[in-house]
Image (cartoon, rainbow, N blue to C red; front, side, top):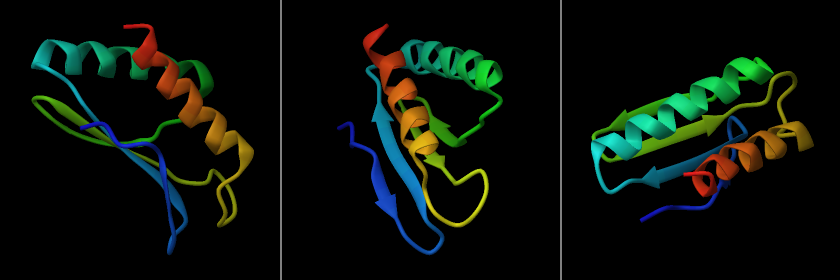
Length: 83
């Protein structure tokens, strides 16, 4: 089950889990995420398994999530609809 972005506290961050049907879909998503991250020089923390990806977006500077962090989350979401 996919989860929406969730705001966590201490430290403040955005988290999301995305599940895929198989390893091929997971790998394709990770490749798209790599390209997006390289383009914007923003790199979420990633953990993954065969059919899931866990993402964490931490603030670039300061201690609070900003609009730029939410925009990165939306850009990541758009990778899913481009599949």
